[in-house]
Length: 227
Image 1 (cartoon, rainbow, N blue to C red):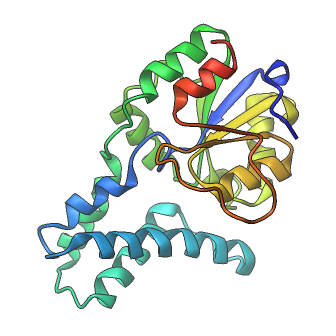
Image 2 (image 1 turned 135 degrees about the vertical axis):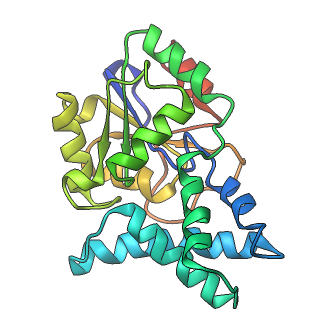
């Protein structure tokens, strides 16, 4: 279905990979890993895999703990020698990941145009508090919505329905902006308009339809909403 800007009153944003760059986590691995990129990629892949499996087997735990388990697995797969303190120091990078350059200005345009802005994330509340503070966008957001509140991770529709209830917005009046293809589809299936933030100019996945809107950054979304 084509994106309908006239329906949108609220914009929700994913956090990791959308507001902040998870690929920057590779730099935190450099002290213990000669080639951090493949370790970082496996860490991220398993972190997401664990959340999706947890939805199906009712094995919820806060995302920070999921992320620790995924990092532990990635380090072990690559035979990295590390202490628990070194591992936790690497994990702590999630509190201060690099912020994409368009985030603050793009959000400002949307907020100034009267849209209510929220973060909707797998991250637990402590992670989101530190991420929002580090990104410097706390004054632009109405609130953050965490998977921890319903103990269901994306792309489970329960999280998106909960987000709509928390924002007090009819779900079909929400545009959800995210870099994650599975998050776009989760939002769309729940009744939101799914906006894919494709900063890398990647091809869309050949699975289950197209995004309602694809933009290169937050300015692209603001342009579409005449903000």
